[in-house]
Amino acid sequence: MVNSKHESTAKKDLLIVGFLCNWCSYGGADTAGVCRFNQPTDLRIIRIPCTGRMDPLFVVKALIYGADGVLVSGCHPRDCHYNVGNFYARRRLEVLKRFLPFMGIHTDRFRYTWVSSSEGQIWQQVVTEFSETIHGLGPNPGVHGETDAKAAMSFF
Ligand code: FES
Figure 1 (spheres, rainbow, N blue to C red):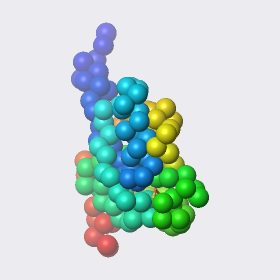
Figure 2 (figure 1 turned 45 degrees about the vertical axis):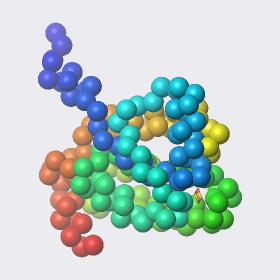
Figure 3 (figure 1 turned 90 degrees about the vertical axis):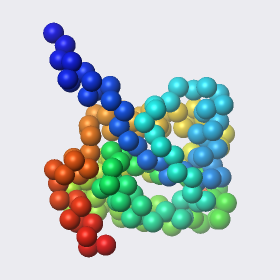
Figure 4 (figure 1 turned 90 degrees about the horizontal axis):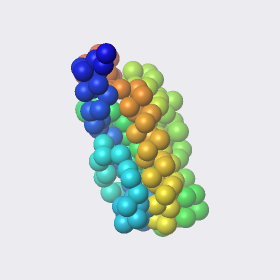
């Protein structure tokens, strides 16, 4: 017998926020759309000029105030239109990953990656895998008040 309550939860869209660099990954997502590759419907994209513009607090705030997962994607290393933006991003986002557990946030809820504008199929794979990971984790407990993540944010 199928549990209808469980089934409706499993099919429910979760909220994944994607911060995509204008020059590469946003183009990659667009290429995937133009090529009509199937993609999960739970990703909401925010276009940023470069991953170097990513403040790690954007990720933390998204996860605390409503997102179930956050994906950051930019140009491949050495392809950044501003030369070193993604190198700065990589450093900051690696440090962020280590801090997430201290805020009660599972590290798998956050991922950063590099996808160029010609890599529509890779974009499809990345976003599909990430969405499956987030669905495997389920809704973000921080959003539903089961952790002290909001209290942790008061330090900022
Ligand atoms: Fe794409 Fe810098 S312009 S990561």
